[in-house]
Figure (spheres, rainbow, N blue to C red):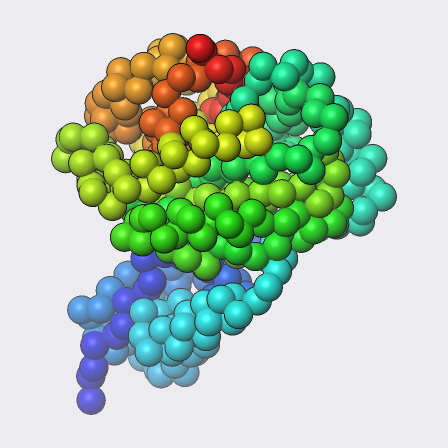
Length: 406
């Protein structure tokens, strides 16, 4: 009997195989509910369209007959379904059980393990220290700096920008006297929400301690906007990289307040300001009060990238850094940056809303959150870069330094 096929999950990563000897489409789970990676051979890629929640097993069988030219496709049909299902890539009860189990496990863990050690940066402590010393250097800025913005792109594509940001850090006598508020992009989080966690962040350099008093204060003051022990922290790089670099500069046991900022989708697409959502407004008030009360005990690091252009990001253009249309993109990036430097929150956000953020600035929400809760600061662009992330796609980012404008 024919029955409806479950749909493929919307939150999967798809990428063409970079190996001409093994062509096809790679599928992986960025949330790591499943650690499986599947390579679907080119002839079968079109069959994936049958997994849309509407088409049936009979539709899949007919498509496989068309693709292979064979009438006996039952074994292939079952193999394709079993591979997708056992990997947790189908939106069905098996996936929901995987998801619930992994999120419950994360909630019970006391430590947020380094998710990108050994891939984005060395996992060995001595080698990592050597790399960070040579590529990042040390703090050289003055004590008037109250915040920096740095990329969260892969370090290998962004060392010059990371260096510009982190060398502008103040030379604190004792970094342990401060809490570093890290505002990171939540690539996987819910819109209009902020992800918090009380977990210790561990890296090959050591353990960074969460400021649980401030975390609890935010959670209590804005429960409608906060997702406590947000699972997104377990797979998110935008904060992990900043923790690692802060440990390099100020020592492994730095104290942190890690905040993942979900996108302000309703404001971008429907107009109005993000704080017109009362839950978001409550979070802004609470974080602003903390900044005002704690003063110089807090230092802010924003882990943000800017524009995402090209084929990887759904654009028709084959983007090339600093060439063709990317020259105009840089001009638009810099116009937004000028408003950020001036502390003109409304002008900056109006530019984000224009075209429903067609530049796809993934750092727009952390930047807005920072400027809204620290209205007195003024910024300065230290470095701007466009990174060719793949042959047809570009990510832009910058290093910024913020000082108290009073």
